[in-house]
Length: 328
Image (cartoon, rainbow, N blue to C red; front, side, top):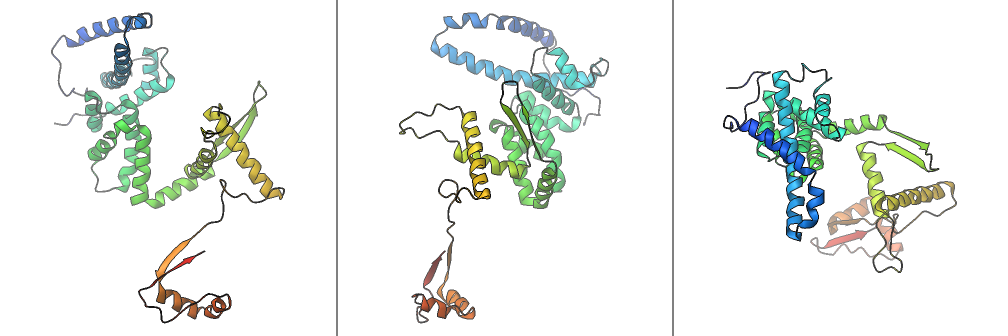
């Protein structure tokens, strides 16, 4: 039977009475023990160090899941509403002093959604560890945007498909949304791009160090163009070069940006020739068509005489199956 809004979500496998108190005691003990870990690492062998790294990171991911589910429980019980916090993210931030604000906001958002019985598929995925909070956060944002474009799709099934990509990270989910829209609603992508372009901006400000900070807010399409150009020109120098490239990735991207702008400015004001090679070059188009189509097209366009004058040979007796390649 479906739960009504406001009811506490039921766990997939109810724990034995008394388990909650025992786990809270273990949590306090574990949190206290974390303070001892840095000083004890030198006592561990290499294999144990690997176990510590893997175990701690897995704990971090699972712990965030539990935090989101606990937030959903607090919302359902009215704990958040009865507090002075302005909402779930603020309530989470109060419980986790020192935690990154972005993490607290994410846990709060997912907690709010998990308190909604319609998102039980997300609750189950977080409970069994098959999905992470960052992925759930993106899935819960992307799913409702995509669903109207797929009228026959089931909401739980769509969310489940997003959550199944948890191992690939949140970025993969956003790329999936773009692919779905491109396949089923390309006009939406065009509208989104046009809307984003209307909001684009570039501004800069001087820093106390004497550097200048440039900030660009670009549409998805324009950002892709810029990123593609910077990546193409910011690769480290080849290993076989005489001098090792010691620049950081950020410095290489900065150099690439200045190089692009300097080259473009030179072309625009006429002080530099149009670049070739790594910046661009002559495009080559290879068109393959059957001989008769080429011959008839040239004849109808009155171009056969021009080709003969230039030394090109067009022989009408060549078999129709012959393939002609015209390179431009």
